[in-house]
Length: 133
Image (cartoon, rainbow, N blue to C red; front, side):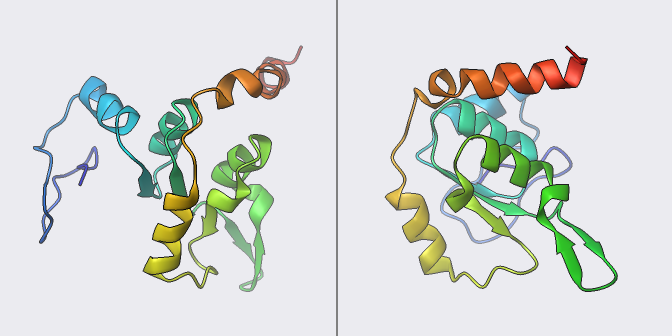
């Protein structure tokens, strides 16, 4: 279990990584892992760009009028949509997945170290849009 930047992890786990952890070590743990399940945006990016299977529990989806949830308001949803991995995205508030189905989804994914190369046009177009070119 990886610690968060704010605190160490406690609980009954087989293995807990010591806290604090350097950004480089944190990056390497994710890069060399078999998969990532979580809701933090940056580990999802690290997983995506290193071909590590992941499940993204999204808590960034904004809620309007107490009932309307707009998926497109989420940076995690946008990232998964742009890279064609929406099956990896789960709305934390609306998803009715079981732990078994989440693990099955993760295990069904094939590591793809070439995803970023195949997605280079998406990345370049996103950068152009950000800087206004």
